[in-house]
Amino acid sequence: MQETPAIDVRGVSLTYVGPPPVAALTGASLQVERGQFASLVGPSGCGKSTLLRVLAGLARPDEGWADLQGQDAVGVTALAAYMPQRDLLLPWRRALGNAVLGAELAGVPRADAEVQARGLMARFGLEGFERAWPGQLSGGMRQRLALLRTFLAPREVLLLDEPFGALDALTRREMQEWLQEVWRQDGRTVLLVTHDIDEAITLSDTVFVMSGRPGRIVRRVDVDLPRPRAALDSTSVRFSELKAEVLEALTAVR
Amino acid sequence: MTHAGRALRGRAGEALPALAFLLTVLVVWEVTVRALDVAPYLVPAPSRVWDAFLETRGVLPGHIRTTMTEALAGLFIACASGVGIAGLLAASVPSRRALYPLLVISQNIPMVVLAPLLAVWFGFGIMPKVLIVALIGFFPIVVSTTDGLLRADRDLVELARSLGAGRWQVLRTILIPSAVPAFFAGLQISAAYAVLGAVIGEWVGASSGLGLFIARSQRAFRVDQVFVAVIVIAAVSIALFAAVHLLARLAMPWQHAGRERTERGV
Image: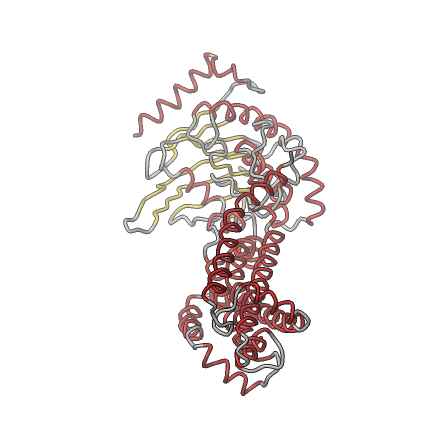
């Protein structure tokens, strides 16, 4: 018997009611196996974020269905840990308080969540900043804190919407390497939305390419590069081939 | 030199022009009154006001205590009722439509009309003054807090929901903390008018308080004492305002934490 995929989206269509009505998704389908790292790339405004919001239970599709670990996820929140584009830290909570928000809302006792968070602060490069306010943290640290909050939510599936979108190129590369390490030790299923093809290939087992609006999945590219992947791997021949494949899929559908 | 030390010296430097101006006004006032020999029951010289202060300082603390008690009790009622009504208004559109016009009307009853009525109904004790302060004070708190609740970042609410928060958890973790700065903005306005409200109530009829002190002084043509009362009222108002400001700082430590961004790491 085949294992239930961690993420299973079939024929999802969604039109935002206007005026004017905007068709965001049309028949989007994708499957991600348990413990896999998958990315979703596509032109801006193609509905990548909408698809993530559907999986997070925040947007309701007009057609199709979305399952998380075999459970119907349509209109159901809290089945996955969702990290929106903005870091959305609560300004009135210190770093540690923000880190435990997801766990706290999931019903984990605050004290237990704090113990767990303290143990992870170092791995997320936040050691010594437990009592800092979000306003005192740099952009990279805020993003890592938002990621820590997402990781601490006791969910098997993580939905990350352009977590590094607002960071400069250098910081971004550091964060990608770091995220790869964190994920390798963590082993949960990740669906990452990005518009950066290099980022998608570097991090993922599978890259899904979306068409322009209304979005659907037009290509699935399996990344067979060995892990761990270093920054230099992006200059390898195989990497270039994969990148060409993604780019070709992107240009073909515009 | 520490940050705090520099900040303090900066503050003192900022206050210097104001102090110099105040001193000049006082000197000109004193000289003019003496030179033109103005009657003290019309305009007393600053030195005479000072004498009146020394003369009345024995009775002032009692009046100040009464006025302060009324202002604080009134503000407390204003906060409790204001936050409650704000919650109600923010919760539903129909309640906003039903209550907002009434709230605006309540603010348009002239205090000079209401104060004597309250004195007739509740007597010369502190009760009618407390009610006046509460009536003046609850409106800014309602408007401001309602606004704060309604303006909470929708994305934060959605994030909390996506993490599994129910209605009450959203209220507790997102909406209420979001509204705290707005609540204090409203409370500061209320605090600025609180002492004035209490004084108006006392002026109409009271057994103690700064308003009563003013009324008695006026009847005795002691304009110098009226000046003393005005200065004391200003000082008490400023103290109350500063106390609320301090309270706001304590309640919102994140707003005053050092803005310097950390250089460590990315």
